[in-house]
Image (cartoon, rainbow, N blue to C red; front, side, top):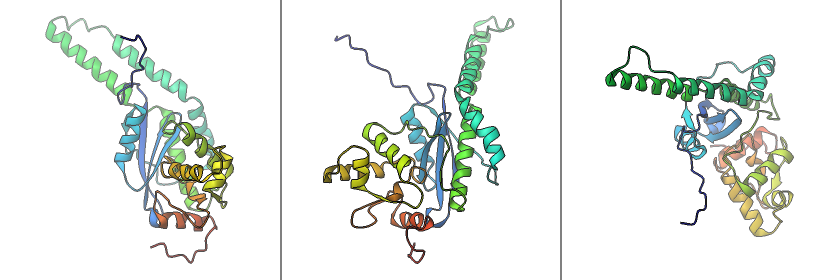
Length: 267
């Protein structure tokens, strides 16, 4: 035995954290978006109505998946977004700690005096376990606020009322160079702008060689936060390039931002 420590991978829900998700309608060829968040921020945007994408993301994060969340019909107004969402996100760690206290209190609760027999004790233990499970499965206020805020901003973007997303992002579904490239894309390529794979590779300090550009193309295809982290703005040197949401969706998004003419056939 080498004695080398091996970090255990938590099973889904083991951490007590929650991945809250919903499906929202979207215009054009997009049709729908599956959107998911943790208390740390928006973690997933997937094209289409795909609950399985939310489940897979939660599994990768080792947290419990809960949804679909029922969103309000009308978008959040600016006052509510500032008064509710931002403080809730800022206090996300506090909410998680408070939830942990509820779990610990439920686990430490004494066996009721009337449940002295083995049967009574077993029933009390089961009831305590149910209370713990409920506390762990309940989304913190921060998670719901993040998801609601993200959905509101996506609606505003599609309505032509928003050009910059400022909802907090949880980058936990990205790693290494993928995170660096997507972070560079988010920070440097604005609404109505485009960049080539090679240019983005150079900005991300991957170099501008053909292999680096191909690597960026693969990273765009694995982007867990499309639209918000705008991989549709990344183009091939000789044309549109590929897109995980399909060519019609990429064309629609670029036309929406004024990069392409509205005369394109999005069918």
